[in-house]
Length: 366
Ligand code: SF4
Image (spheres, rainbow, N blue to C red):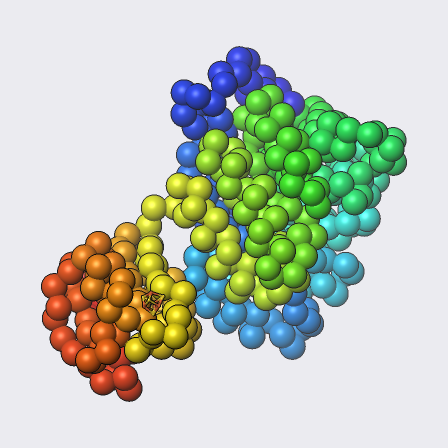
């Protein structure tokens, strides 16, 4: 890549995250990098047919309210390219087309208003094919993610014992093609299925380039191991200021990927808006059903942008105490269910009124 993307000097991250400042890349209505807020994204897992377009557009609206900024779709054939294109025409959320093997799919999908295409250096093929994709992306104002994956490295790098170095090298080779055409609307991802490789590859890349990074652990597994692996890899990187967008890859729903992504962003200090939910794990002392209550209010809490702390507690042992630190709290006490605003008891509610009363009180804080 040209001078603009390569760091001249690297300052160790002691001085703060500004040492990893990246270039701002417009992706549809979003900006990735350049100090823009971290973008949480996911990938569509359901059927993709002309009949599903309206349902998918509605689902994107729902996920957007939960904090999802970007949706990626696999594009395995020309029919999918057209369906993804139709979704992009109707969706307010920017749409990313995920291309493997056939560069013509990237060319076709860019006839529609997609915001970004992802290409995989391990399988997109000859240089001239990449060049055709890059020229069309330039013409259409589409961003490109060079998405390198440890499971599909280019052939000549597959046997490198240092997988992190091979991931970086694969990205650099592809970036050289993009750079030779003066293309700058680029984002890179370096994904492995193990934590150490993912962290190391991204650190090395961030020290060398100002190109925004999309972070993720590939094939992280089902919900619980997937959360643990993704958190272990992403929190250190994000806390150091590395990473501009994240995707948590789970053998579970898009909704769960977004929820986990939002919590990882918060735990890394990269998202300071929204509800900080404090809740007790519940034990046999409980006189208020914490889990059942949270299940009902959590989707709504996710749509709140304002930074507030909410406590949901099972009993008098820690309930009133946590209420002191919360903007709004609800707790069982054994003598009833009470709502607190900034530590002050404001009302008592019956179990079947708890959700409505809580949502009513939260409105007063917004
Ligand atoms: S607040 Fe009460 S119910 Fe919740 S874990 Fe603590 S002791 Fe148990």
